[in-house]
Length: 84
Image (tube, rainbow, N blue to C red):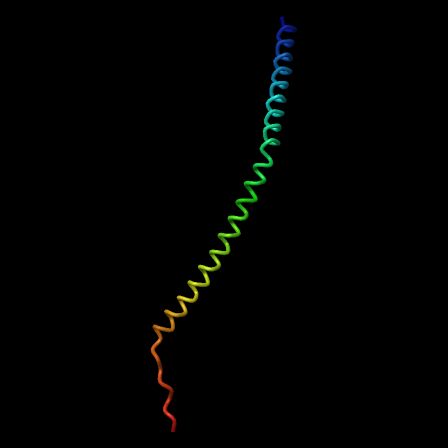
């Protein structure tokens, strides 16, 4: 009886291992098929990120300019010291 149990366990182990191998191979095959699409998606996102970085730099420049204008406007105009 114990030989039957050992045989059943070994059969289950081999069958389970084969099933896991088949699932992993299918997953790997699916990922290989998706790879060109994933690469295009990554390139598109990098291009979009570059555009966003450029726009952010422009916004930072405009904000800095506006801050300088506001600072100049808030400072009172001072007369030069009187000449003796």
